Length: 162
Image 1 (cartoon, rainbow, N blue to C red):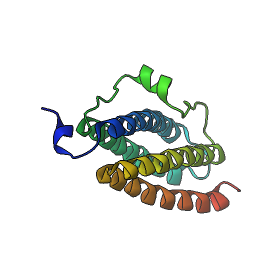
Image 2: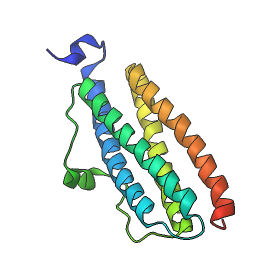
Image 3: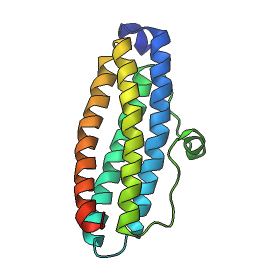
């Protein structure tokens, strides 16, 4: 039996939502990996603060990747698990060689700008389909990420000379 048979959602609308969730999952996997690299390689006066912050952020990204995969499964899709496919599908690019606070925070903020934009689109599509669970998930992500962006922006003004 299919889970979708019990969810009272239109299969054709859910197909588009699943596709968007898969793309977002790919973006989160790349974001997670970029954050790990920032965590490992950050240097300078903000090392202690940013090293800890990037660990917090990559743990959060890993949790969100798991939630996205589970939502894909709930809606009858199959989440990708090959990194080669994540790299092919993701709209976020891999980052390397970043060790300064200014560059690191800028990369994180640019990544959040992309993720927030995609989450807003997904929220709108899910709302139109009556998929309140995906709406709630995206709404939670947006609430958390908007606060994180505010805090990183405020920190960057003092820590990174922006």
